[in-house]
Image 1 (spheres, rainbow, N blue to C red):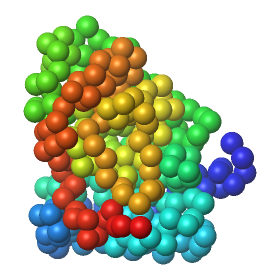
Image 2 (cartoon, one colour; image 1 turned 60 degrees about the vertical axis):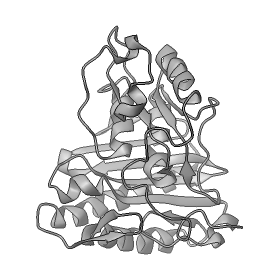
Image 3 (cartoon, rainbow, N blue to C red; image 1 turned 90 degrees about the vertical axis):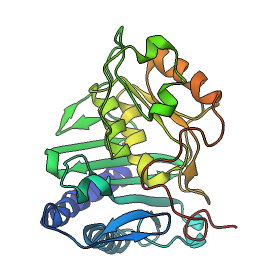
Image 4 (cartoon, one colour; image 1 turned 60 degrees about the horizontal axis):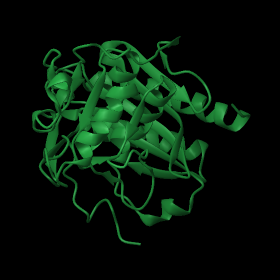
Length: 280
């Protein structure tokens, strides 16, 4: 890893840990909550973390672009070589409900690909990180995807799982995991074999977790088998599959056969084009 990327990883690692501390001051402490466009909730903690991260990261790298769920998007970032892609609290609904499955997600993206990524999950005491040419780590220890079980543990929307072949649905039913980034990290760590992802997830839900999964030996793919590209003009994505090996290959076949809006949208994915996906 070159010195500049190592410095970027160190920067986002430290920022994410401090952001987690800020979020924990609000967690289970009745934070103010309101609804934004698309009937998606946002809390005072989301805004406090977003404000801290934007101030801290932009001061350290003023030439980097900025793309965050809680910041109004502008096309100026498209001229930057690298971009911070941030979800201040991925899994806001879980956070508001006092559940622990949420995380701070930060990635550094260049030419559509994440080069460094971290997930700080302070309520669970878990910290995931990866960079482009090293292992995926959980609390400093390398992680890897699981070998596919005879009855694989596949998460995702029921509407998408119902389209999968019976052998893919033979494992245990996985309870709903509100944070998409955390769900993908569970695949990276081997806690799940795979997950489907509904249409209308966003860059900030995916970028850091995508890199962590890839460095753990898995992949996140679109219908055509390609990896998602990030920090472009439109941060939205269609149906996706995350997993490894034969299971991921078969899952790609499933999502390739879905209608464009099959399965609805991922939680928190209701932003309108007036805020994200601007025209250029």
